Structure formats: C-alpha cells, structure tokens
Image (tube, rainbow, N blue to C red; front, side):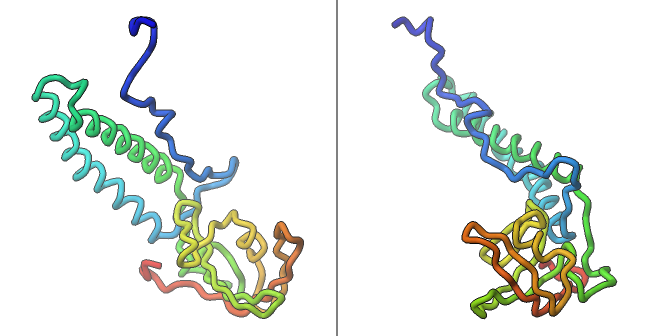
Length: 189
C-alpha cells in the first residue's frame, strides 16, 4: 500500500505515553503531608528550571543538524520533552488541588487521622507499621499507605487499644491498634 494512504509516524501520541496515575476520588480533596508537598514542588521546579531547558537545547542542536527523520537525538529529545511537559502538567494540577495537612498539629494524638504512623498487630500476632499519607506519596517499601487504601480506611478514627476490622480478599481480619504517633514538624517523613 502506498505510504500516502497510511499514517505512519515514529512519534507516539500523548495517549500512548500516558502512565496510570492515582486518581483523586471525586468530591474529595487531594490531601498531602508538608513533606510530600515539598517533594512534588521541588520536582516541578527542577523540571522547569533544569531538565526542560537542557532538553530544549539538545533538541535545538539536533534540529540544526539537518534530516530530523533519522536523527536519534532529535527524536529522543522530542519524546523526552513531551514526557517532561506531561509531568509538569500533572504536578501543576496536583499541587493546585493539594490541601496540605500538618499532622504535627493534631490535638487528639491517641486517635488515627491523616499523617499518623500506626503500629498494629494482626490476628496471628504479626506486627506492622504504616504511615497514612496522600495518594501521591505512597511508598509501600517504607510503609507509606494512601489515606484511601483499605488499611487506612480501617484504621482512621481508631484509638490505641481498639480492634478494627480490615476487609481483605480472604475475608474480614481483626487488627489491634498498638500505637499511634504523629511526626514532629519538618521531620521530612
């Protein structure tokens, strides 16, 4: 078939490159810890002030070399520029919707709210520690879980000594709240 009738492009559309990002539930705020907000803001500023200008320089230099259709620097640079711009848009939207919650100001420190670090034990006696954070701050390797996760929803508003029910695919599981802590100001989490 003649190439004139087939749309062939080495460049991918923005939809092809989209990576699934966690959604803020409809009708809720994008709660965030001060440390998480600071990290996202720093990333945004780094992309705008450092990475994007470097890639723009590279693309400009590659474009000046002539034939762009087979110029790897140009093609990769344009793709990277789209990725950076997409991330800038994402971060800007998330930061605009963010509501920063400083958990160090929590007055009821014996009860679980956003920003709490909770030690709990499962039915088999195994102990776990989680910190309830915003959806953009989740890091399971260090025990940071989203405030909309099943474990966080089970723990929210519980107090030290309470037993709450965590609904899992294997069925309901009772968990005992052992300790609730809130980080000191500027702990960086």
